[in-house]
Structure formats: C-alpha cells, structure tokens
Length: 463
Image (cartoon, rainbow, N blue to C red):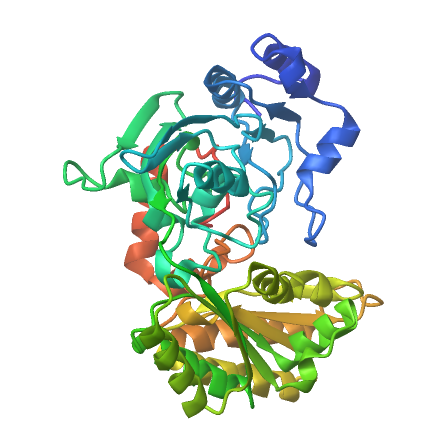
C-alpha cells in the first residue's frame, strides 16, 4: 500500500474504477478466488485486490498507473496455464489479463509473418495460417488453449521443437507496455536484425517481470512439400531409447518430432485408454518426418534396428498418425488422474540424456516413488513426473528430496532445470545455483532498470 497514505481497499478500488471500464474490472470474491489460485498447483499465495480483463492497451496503461500510485503488485495473466506458479496472485495484487486481446492483426504470407495480440490461441493462429498454406511452428501440449502471449512470456517449447525450435526461435518483434506506462517496439518484421541491443529476446521468457506484451510479430513457415510420416517404435528400456534418439538426431533423417514415454507412462495410458502399448516394450518413441524420401526412411529404419527397436510402425495415413499422436496427448490425463503429482522439466545435451534417465530410475527405486518419465527426447528435455497418494495432502519429503537431486544431476550434466516450463515461484531460488552469482546479479539489475518499483510479477523468474 502507499507509503504516505492510509487507504482502505475501497478507496483504492474507487480510484481504479475511475480509470477502468466496469466491464473490464472484477472485484467479486468468486472471480478473485478463481483467478488468484491455480487449480493444479498447491500453495495459495494471496488473494488479489482486483481482476482486470484488458480490452485495450489503454486499460493496461491505466492499471499500471494505479499500481504505481499505490505500490500494488501487477500479475499478468494470459490463459492462466502456468505449471510453475507463474501467474497466481499475491496479496492485494492487480491481476491483469490479456486474454481478451485476441485479434490476428495481420497474416502476411508474402513475407512469412503474422502480427497477433497476446490472447490469440496458439492453435487458432496455426489453423488460420494453414488455410493460407503456412503454419506456426511452436506447438506446446497446451496448443489448443494457451495464448501466444503466455507462450512468449515463458518461451514455451513443443513437440516439434527438435526441428523448429522453441517460441524464442519464432518471434521477430514485440510491442510491450513498460511498468512506467511507456509503449516500446522491439525487433521488427525482418528475419535479419542487427541494429541495437537484442531486446526482443530479453522479453521472451521474462515471465511478465519486465513488461507486458500487447502485440507480437511471429514467423510463419510454408507447409512442407511431400508426404509426412509418423511412427512409433518400442525399446527394451529408456536408456536404449535415449541413445537411439541421439543417433537419429545425427543420422540426417531430419526428424520433426522425437517424443519418449517410459514403461510407467505406457501402463498408465493403457489403463486410461484401455490399450495394450506396454506389452510391446519398456519404452516408446514417437517420431515424425516431413517431406519423406526413400533415403530418409532407410536411414531411420536402419538406426532403429541398430538399437533393437521393435514393433515399429511407420505411416503416412492421417487417421493412423492421429492415433499415434493421441498416445502422447493421453499422457497427462493418464498420469494425473487419481494421483497427486508434480511434473518437472529438465533438459540436458542429448548425448547425456541416457545418464539422466538412469539416475531418475535409481532415485525412483531408492526412495520408493513412482516416477513417470516422458518428454521431448530429441531435445534432451525430460518431464519426470513424481506421484503419490491423494490421501496425502502435503508433498512428501521424499518427493522434495528427489526433485532437488534431479536438479543437481541435470546441472552436473551441463543442462538446465527448466527446459520449457519457465521458473515462476517454484524455481526462483535456483537462479544462483544454475546461473552463478554474476549472472544472478545482472538479472536483478535488468529487472530494476525496467521495473524500478518492483511491481511487475514480483518474486517470479528471479527471487
């Protein structure tokens, strides 16, 4: 609250109502509770003072003006799908939602870009581009419902990241509202940009701590020529699969997708979907290749055979491809249904993924915990999910210990403890460990430069 005035919440809300339209401002308890606390995450960090559904850039600027006046935290939300408590409220915060800023402003297929507002759903942009013979490459599992703004704020990855990279690799420019209300444009509409500091990529992955994205210019790619093939192969264990994945990356077969599922995940999916995938092997690899040629297929099949792959399926039929990808899409509901669970997100060089997989299995046995390991194997990005009984409300100490040990192992293998899920409140204490003291200090200095009052998403990204 303001240092020099003793104000009631109602007096602050009255000031807020004078700046924000009634149809954009919500202060009722039901809405505040719904938007303050994630449904899928433990730990309620505080109840917001107001929820603001921005319909314009002016709404954002007006909300920031009130926040500066009364020293209120501003928590930016898009579709509210963070898995690391990145958009939960804090006490007396203003939650500023950009979800209603959802227009595709320009779809330029001549120069290969789209200009969109942050609330445009990832899958909707891709669908619009495909009607024009293009596509939007980043495809996180949340593609059907996550917004482009949230994807950019967290540098979201996706299933096809092995070929097309993460969100960062597909953003050309941004329009951002700063904490002081100024609007800046960074980057542009060209694929080459060498003028000035690269502020565009500074905002990507900044999790709302440096500014609020109100517009983005993103790359569109032409749909690949020729047929696409999708396949499914089974391996004796995840270690063999990991080694095979690294070999496929180096083989020249140019995969678009390389997704891994361990035996625990396969069994959970079988139970969830009434299938029998787990009878085929102890680990499964889903793969996809665009623009298939006989040479690509031969290379891929030879590599799979070299690493004892079995029950190999390879198809160009769209219906069968959909059935294969549904196996990956069933992973989350299969694991989370009927269990308490925490999904982690580590990435290591692909050549070291097998060692990380082995270590996770050792921890599972040592601490008697059921761990489901899956992930974007082509990028060395694993999502070990630790589960425990719903009868236990608190996170067991063994789970906390195992998470810490997995993080330390990922860093030992020259990896990261956040491949694509961002940092939020869950991992902000690890900045010093992963990045080192000098980089940690620089991050705080950057934060202070852009947000000297510390009102933008405080405690997220950096502690």
